Every structure is written in C-alpha cells, then in structure tokens.
Length: 246
Image 1: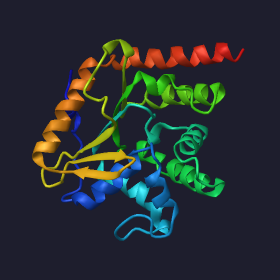
Image 2: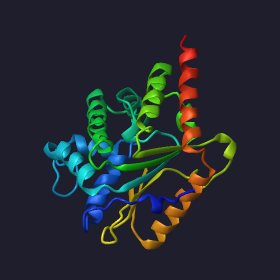
Image 3: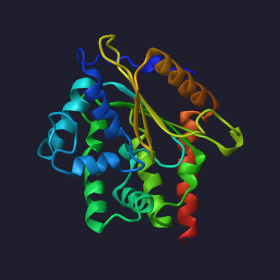
Image 4: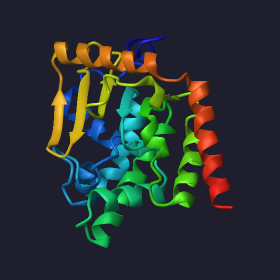
C-alpha cells in the first residue's frame, strides 16, 4: 500500500508556515464546528483574515498551496465531503445549545470551503473513515442516503481517495479519535497534524509527532478496505437506505 508521504507529489508554496497550514487544517475538518464558528464571525480566522475575505481565502488555499490532506475520521464524514443537510444535522447534534442562526452560519461556512477540492490544482484528499461514520444515520434516512450518494460521487474524482475500516477489522490505531495530516512537498513548508476535539484545537509539528501520525495513517490504510471496495460499500449502504424508505 502506498504511504501518505509518497502521495504528496504537488509542489507547495515556499515557506507557507504553521499559520497558513493551521488555516487549511481547520478548513478540512468537519466535526465539532469550531472552525465554522470562526469563519462565520467577523475576524474569525486568526491572523490577517477577516470574514469578508473568507471566500477569497478558500480559493487561494486550494489553488496555491496544493498539499495532500490525509484525514482519519471515526464518527463523522469530513467537512469537505458533507452535504448541506448532513452538515446541518451534524452541527445540531454536536451543538444542541446553538441557535438556528448559529447553526446556519456554521453550515454556510462549511459549504463555502468545499471548492478546495475543485480548484486547479485541487487539494489532494485522502480519507480513511471508520465504518461507523457511514452507518450512523445522521439526519434521518433521506439525508443520509443523499449524503452517501454525494460521497460516492465526490470520491470518484482523481484527487480524492476514500477507504473504510470495516467493523470486522477489530481494534485499530485510529480508535482514539480523528486527526488530519497536512503533508507539503516542499521541505521549506511545515507539515502539520491537526486534532479537533471537545477540549479544543491541537496542532503538532515536531518531526517525532509527524512521523508517528504518518505511521498511524499508513497503518489505518493497511487495515482498511481498498478504495474500490470502499466505494462499493458506500453504494451498498445508500441502496439499503433507499429500500428502507420504500
């Protein structure tokens, strides 16, 4: 199985630094919604980016830096792959105290960053998810069916790869939780690990941490279904939901 390091063949901008890498990591993530809250408020992103610039920022990140984002998720589908209805259901579920306006702000911010996958050159996105993320019926059968159909369509693109860790694989290194590895081709750029948890954002950049999480991701890839079999499982689950709905 090809490792994540070997997939990173696009050239990133010189010295993009931790700050921009942190921006992009937050844009890729899609679980707890803190990124979406920041993007929906004036001055939401740290540094020089205000909310009025967020659409331009998404395009610049997607077209200029062109890294590989390796994302493992145990409970959610990644934000870049979510439909609007699925995102809304996820945000309502994890933030039950949020107002309707707050939920919609987060949903809109999440939708605005999805063009990262379609820019030229596009973000190279390698996703490994636990089977639970596919089988959890978020938002009801109709919403989840549409999400699975959308997922099958998006990951068919050459810049996206999806692999699913089946329940039958048993215990695996990803069980403690999600993470994102941003792998830049240029040695002047800082590779970055981003972990989004209920305790807050965590960014890791030491060589030891990067090496450890690369090894974990490669291990997850090895125990997961192949991209072809993973795509077949997504289609199969969508059909099951369709049949349940009559």
